[in-house]
Image (cartoon, rainbow, N blue to C red; front, side):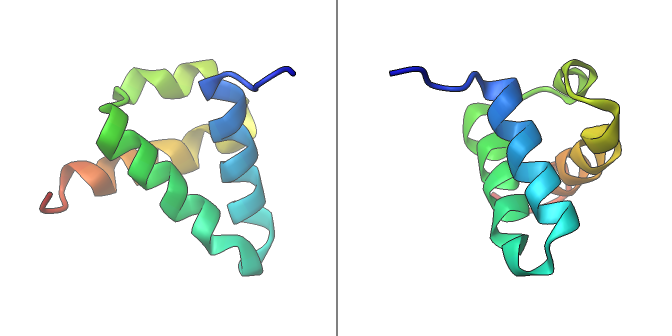
Length: 67
């Protein structure tokens, strides 16, 4: 069985959350991944351009939120 790498997983979650209002949980999942795995801001450069801005936005929100 093939498992997607972290960049692919994050891209899928971001694209889903950005394009389907019923999938906002996917954006929250990305926030949790950033928080728990301590994913750095520059990780966003590995992602498809369509989702890079949303990743940066969510990354910043995690940095400014209490633990």
